[in-house]
Length: 400
Image 1 (tube, rainbow, N blue to C red):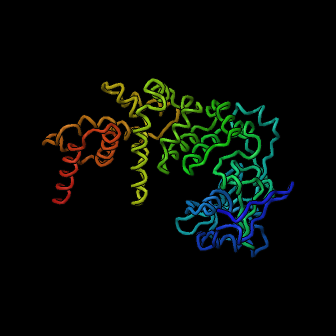
Image 2 (image 1 turned 120 degrees about the vertical axis):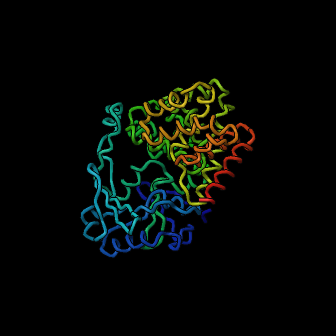
Image 3 (image 1 turned 135 degrees about the horizontal axis):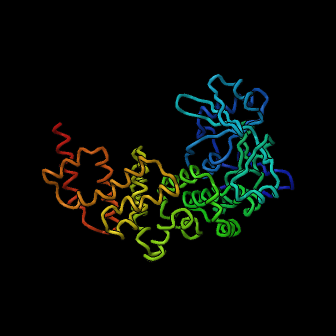
């Protein structure tokens, strides 16, 4: 992947010149380039940072292009008329180009000491950031593969943390002491799983050991952030692997104990849970290729299908989904949709009749059809009846 890997001198980064890496400006968002060039022309240091650099080095198309700079937030705002500042504890600059946002952050450093992090870990994350340098900014990031900078001035990649080696080795490694980093911000453990599943990388042994040791710290994290990260585990079509790692390290039992118990008693690594999620992953990839987002209600329904099917009682959908409401505070819309999808199986299990066919006019009908297809494929059951519903829906649609 890279021409060669260098050794880093103490307190100095490894700098990979343009011939030594594969990043090309033609693959960088033109609006991100505008931000980088503008800040650079004003005399500020400005780098492309984070996951965008990682994805470019791996030949992937980044979802976001973020900028790190020596310019203070108000200085960024003065440089761009289309800039808006957000955040209270740490100000971020959002440079807007239509609906697109290029997030621009001043280089940071962690202000609290290691002792303060440990002392207050039970109270939640204490990431009270202050402005810093490129070096301190690199070391405060979560994983080495996300700690790389691309310099627009000479097109080099700057590596303070060994991220290039870990990309080459396909490893997710915490920057610094993982025992400290995961107590500092427990959501990083979920992010490690997300990156591992998405990229196909292994979690480095010391990092994984710290996750298994501190998994219960996830209960001290902000519930909205945890809920957001749970749904992000679905977005790249690798949810089966992601939730398997959540279960193995103990975090799934912390967040969704009923689901974790179901996996334990239904075969562990051979539980039907993984079949439901594997089929969902194929559906996620197909919908992504078509430019569609899978609703969180459908994702939640598939995730909890195992316990729901095991119960087989009336009202089981509400009881099963209540765990996600209590633990993750999932949005009401996702909850009600998930319950409807789970309980739509009875309606769609027999051919459409005059009375039943009215369900086709429900706004969630197509999602219900897809949900039941996912369940049928995971359980290797016939989809003939679902095909009848689909054909009738298309027929009715063409007549309207």
